[in-house]
Length: 80
Image 1 (cartoon, helix red, strand yellow):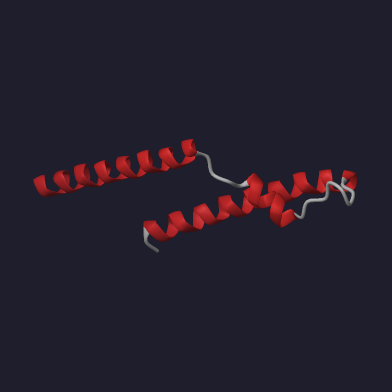
Image 2: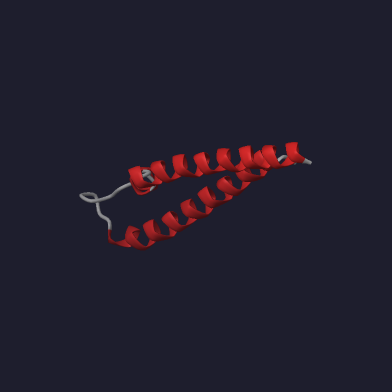
């Protein structure tokens, strides 16, 4: 398995764990919902899981770091 596939699997696991936590929180609110304030889990999850700009910028920073690490590794392997 390539490391890209491993990262995808790990990200999927985190996403599923986050979804399970959101569902647990929604379940605690469910008994207090009525026809005036009911929100479906799908709508709650959509609002709950929206990424922030900080998350997006940190992803870009992480990808930049990965690129730099790859370049350093390639240089070191070229020196051998």
